[in-house]
Amino acid sequence: MSDTPDPPPEPAESRAIELLRLVGSQTPAVGAGYTTRLITRARAQAAIAAPLRAIGGLVAALASALGHAVRATREGRHS
Amino acid sequence: MSPNQATDPSVPQDAQLVRLTTEGDLRAFEQLVERHRDVVVRVAARIVGTQDAEDVSQDAFLRAFHRLGAFRGDAPFHAWLLRIAHNAALDHLARKRAEPVDPEDLDEPEAPSQRAPAERLEVRERIERLERKLRALSPQHRVVLVLRDAEGLSYEEIAEITSTPLGSVKGRLHRARREFIDMLRANTYDWELS
Image (cartoon, rainbow over all chains, first blue to last red; front, side, top):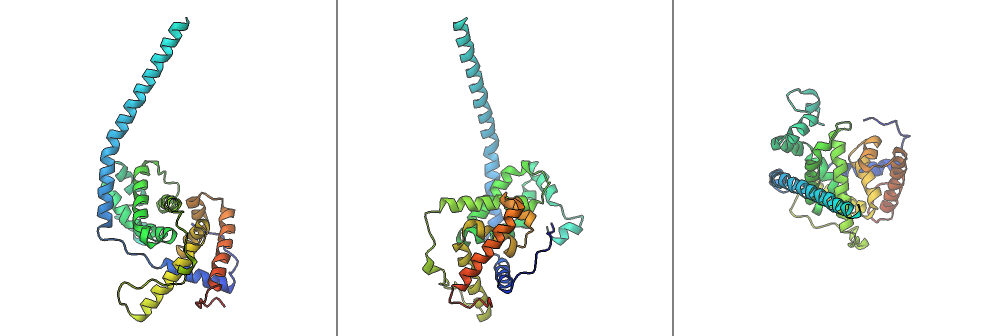
């Protein structure tokens, strides 16, 4: 993406930007196996996500059915 | 996006890797992680500190993994990912808010873990001092300096990542730079600010 050009920064600002670029030039080291660990966690979470979604769906369906049943019972008593 | 990715048709685009991942191909997700790991780790490190950067960046990638289905491709993938990383980093800071920065620590360089050539050591020491200065800023100011000046992102991308109007990004950046400069000037170390 491109920006509209900024007015030229004052010297102190230019120097601060230069120092921040220096900070940005260094990537902290991560532990060996970073990606492998991450993929293992993603795989494990994906494996439990599907059953959890199914259980969530089942609980929601049961709650909805129970709600209908309670309403039907109340309406039956009033009529 | 790397230049190779933009020009070489054999290198899959981010959007293609996202689609493959949502279809269950974790090797595609692995490629996305490898491609964007450095920038996510850098941004996390500059917001939460180097020590916690690995955990926060892993958290960000896992959050992204679970939300890939919501990626529409109307913004570049790296901006979408950095938005998640930014939120993960701020959540981490919120959890750790009870630990204030000790002003006496701001100018104390950490002992280097191993011997290095003098010049490299000096650069490393300068960066550590600057990182400590950054951590003394408010998270909002820190984020905008990291994204704009350290990572070179556009105002539009920063607005997208931080969910902030474009005009506010520019105003915040101006105030953050002033605060950062004042902080450097208040320091005995010579930052050659003129």
